[in-house]
Image (cartoon, rainbow, N blue to C red; front, top):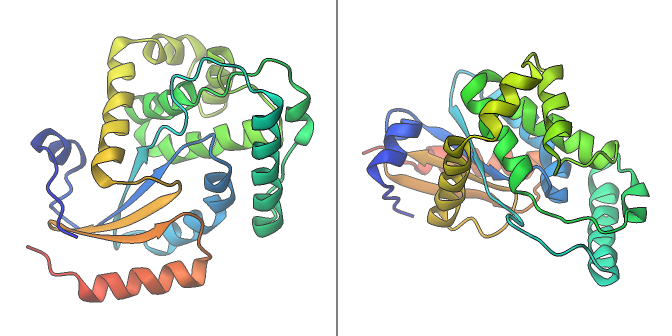
Length: 226
């Protein structure tokens, strides 16, 4: 696949300089939560070889309607599938909530906010939001919950909230959603290798480590930097 990004996207990510792993995810996507240990292993083993960039996909941004019984049943089935496939911990007490609005924009914006406050902790913020939501049944659609998570990573709550609520962070989050569409990442998690202008899809959806690593090695061998 040949990749032509907007110039400001290229400047933002420095995508043409060295090979990049591009990870498209949403902190409130259950399969992304299940994929977290695989991604962590791959990222650790590629440290110093490939640069890593996180893109927030926006699973259900701007949702305003509370979850009904049908949606709860569908989401619960997904969680059960992820739990069985990945052995990640889930708190199914979530489904006892009434009138929960599954808006993933705040969680995405929280990760983008961390990107600009303490970029080296961006992925850690995403992982902590995942654990808070899935394993501890915290409502990560609420700013005060997200600020508490940021505090655990060393960011004062007032500092985080001021940045989180800014028009700048809302716009930067929308830019990530636009990049997701440009990448045609229509399922989460999605992982790409970008070398020069050549973009290779490594995974669309959950994939085990061995299969993913083999796909990466194949893509690296076939990449032709421009």
